Image (cartoon, rainbow, N blue to C red; front, side, top):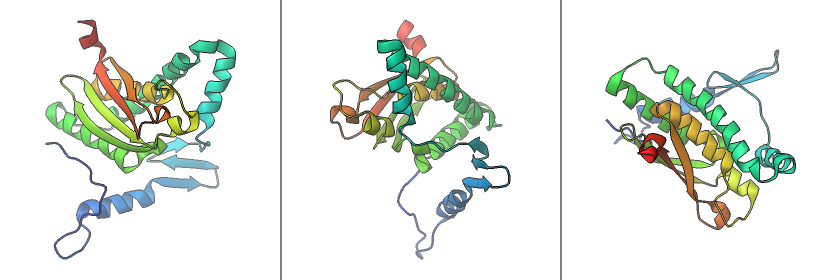
Length: 202
């Protein structure tokens, strides 16, 4: 069963919030936890630090000074490692197997991206196909594109790498992420295609 998340408030015929809305409301209250005695912040149980969103652009600028035109692929490679780690957390949190595991993973990915957006922007997962190891993701107000400014080519290298790593774990295949549209090019949103490297090699 394909469970899609809704962004509008869903109510019962009597106008009362349904169980999904109440669960999401409670979840949103408990997403961030501050431990003042230790100076720690956790998000969904994972310890976090808070950095300004332009930190990726600053890192990219520094890499460009060090390695010139290799900065973008270098950043993408580093981001893929972060994505792999995040994807493994998703996968390890699912205890079911087979089709139930796929459904639970897809539901978790939709929830993690579309309900919280992870600060990437307004994320919409249009499609996930476990058999073909494909996915289509659209990000409105993508943080990386907004920070990078205008460009002739798609330039969300960190986001592409992160998505490739995460979906490699979720889909359990070697995949690549390609940005097909970018806000930096004047498009209304950034669009990413996740495809299997195995299919590309054939």
